[in-house]
Each structure stands twice: as structure tokens, then as C-alpha cells.
Length: 279
Image (cartoon, rainbow, N blue to C red):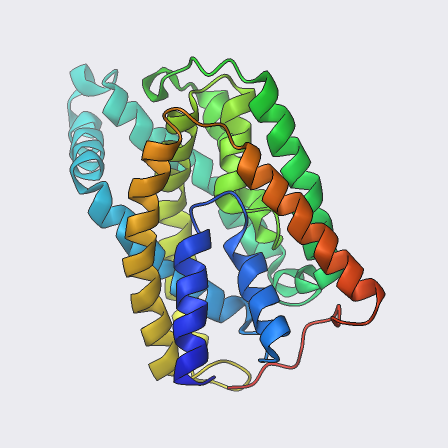
């Protein structure tokens, strides 16, 4: 991987991580279209540490309140009904599906799931599901009204993002809309719910960077830094955008992109299988 491709892929990661359009799909597609080796699941997971650091910085006050209240509530029963303490438990509960499935499906995540035919199909299919959810959403439920089975629903929706093309934020936001949450609240929980999973996944994948068939440390670190800066700006923009906009533009983009990928695959302009990784 060159320094230039690292900057480009870092920009792609930062721009697409929080939008419901799938950052892993875009990293895969940009590399394929540019003629670069597939950066791989390890590179994707590590660069997500950059965008997740942006979440930690942007929501630092809210995250600190959740963590401290949740910790105090363990010893102080009177605090257990506090929405911040309950949200802490719900985030941990919602993390279980992606943790379990991520371990169980590690091999296909790194190989078969990265097939561009699957990427295109999930871009289109889950884009249409997001559009339907947005259309029928009541847009009323605030985040502090979350209950246990909602947390599990969010968790399983997030776990679908193990397949490139689904989108971590897209899956979680779709679940939130179907459960009646406000658009901004659904986006916010997608940011917060991703923290444990992304930090754990990225930390585990750090050991693979620089080994055979993975990018070297230098370009990976640069891409991660770029993704942090761009990701922070995207968070601020998206939360403002969702106060008075639907997800229509993202749905149209997903369907269009997926259709273009299928067309290119059909005429041989793209190769469906993962390219052999190289540094």
C-alpha cells in the first residue's frame, strides 16, 4: 500500500463510516476500481479505530456521563433507574451479537463476504429496507425510552454489518426507525453502540498489520489519522442533517451504486472475488 492510497482510503473510511452507505463496501470498491489490492478486513478494522476515536471525542461529555453513572449504579441501587446507567447496560447487551458472530464467522468475514456480488446485493437490498423503514417511521421515540429487547434488536442489526455493504450505521438506524425512534436518536445510538465492538475488533486486528498480506504500519497509521479528522466532521454534519431530512438521498445512492457494481461485474469491468492482498 502506498502513502497516496492510504490517504485516499482514510478519506473514504472517514466519509462513509457514519453514513448509512457502508464504509467496508466503499473501501473494497475504491481499491478494486483503482487497481489496488483489497486492503482487507484487518485494515478496515484498524482504520475504524480512527473514526471511533472521533466518536469518543465528539460525544466525550455524554460518554463520560454514561460510564460514571453506570459504574456508580453498580454500588448505588438508587441510580439503577437513571437513563444513563440503563443505556450503559443496553450498549453492553447490544454488543453481544456482533461479538459472538464476529468470532464465529471470522473466516467468511475476511474472505467470502468480501465478494463484490455480495457487496452489491447488500447495498441495494438493505438500502431498500432502510428506505421502507424511513417511510413508515413514526419518528417519535427518544433514546432514553430504550428497553431491553430494543437493545438486542439494535445489536443484531449492528451485527449484520459484518457483511460489507450492509453498513453498521445503516443497519442500526434501520432498526431504530422500525422501532419508532427519532432519526437523530437512531443515529446517536448507532454511534454509541459501535464503541465497544469497534475498539475490540480494531485492537485485535492491530496484531495483523504489517504481517503477510496486510498493509504496512506506516500507511495504515496515516489512513487511521485521516479517518479520524474526516469522521469527526461527518458526525457533526449528519446529526444536523437528520433534524429535518429523511434518508432518501442515502437510499438512492446505495441502490445506484449497487446497480453500477452489478453492471460492471456483468461486463467484466470488475472482478467479484477479493484480489490477493499485498502491502
